[in-house]
Image (cartoon, rainbow, N blue to C red; front, side):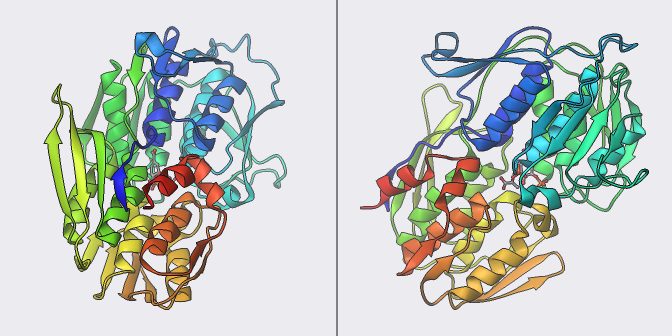
Length: 436
Ligand SMILES: O=C(O)C1=C[C@@H](OP(=O)(O)O)[C@@H](O)[C@H](O)C1
Ligand SMILES: C=C(OP(=O)(O)O)C(=O)O
């Protein structure tokens, strides 16, 4: 695999910026927003909550497509305009950022809003974010459950006729960093702002919480972390803004790994030098697996051209720690190494699009490799030895895991490559272009 790749925009940054545009104090423009299932669901959800969405061919003279959002109306306490909006429905699909980020925004509008999603989404953990909202006075219920039973998964309805006052709450976010981000993103529009404390052992994917805080700060919101695992967002207007979205560095992973597993070379221009995305870790991770990574600064100084060259034989780093959403792609590298690789601090992957720990172990074994689950992750013991059908489980990263394996082993077929549309609808075309 040899060539140059331009990956689409970041899902995580797109969905944060779209949401914050809907809470800003005037129309805002998100340039180079991702177009994918997750971002479409975010836009549709924000529209349901009252935001206006316009697609622009040229975002503010940059000749790049953009989305202009006119903010949604917030509840005016006392909630004179809050109507009985039992017909406001938000479809979350399988998007964690929609199911975890929009309930607090829904509460700010004063409407009763019903959330549901794909069958696979109905098992993804939601408890902590819903408990947090309940602590803030929001009525959270599953209309089909017995009276009094607090929902911990989709579907559910949130309703807070007077909007959100905010204050100080504590939740256990050990299941997902999105529980923290989902409450902090809405916090500037809570009348008292929000102090949020995490009460469990550790928060996974902490890079994503840092991304939330940085984006808020870049948009003029005052944020702080007064103690470990405690965050404070001050109340206030979010000035209307224009922001451009970086390329998705997590989705860059399969392409960079394509070079790594084939002894090829893949070039990416416009790689941000200073990103909040967890995908910034690829340069070190690929080096750890034996690839050669070069970066050359581009004019302007904010981006580099990244070149990844694959080694003759991959080497295992032994342990790979806390790699969150990068893990399925890294598991493909591990499944092509002779030595053992142990993935640690990724227990929360069981609550992703599918139980990724179980899925990765099953699929590696299906192709003749040896792998086992551990308490906080999994271990790849020996490489895959033959082809077969890799199951996707509706999970874009399981599909791209299979695609990377198929470059190194004959006869690998990936079921439902279309599920990559969750964050990268152009994956099949971009992939084909790299094949010699
Ligand atoms: O905030 C975000 O944009 C995300 C946070 C992470 O969630 P978890 O903390 O559940 O891993 C990550 O895996 C997900 O793809 C995107
Ligand atoms: C975990 C992921 O997605 P979500 O935003 O749906 O949680 C992911 O993209 O790997």
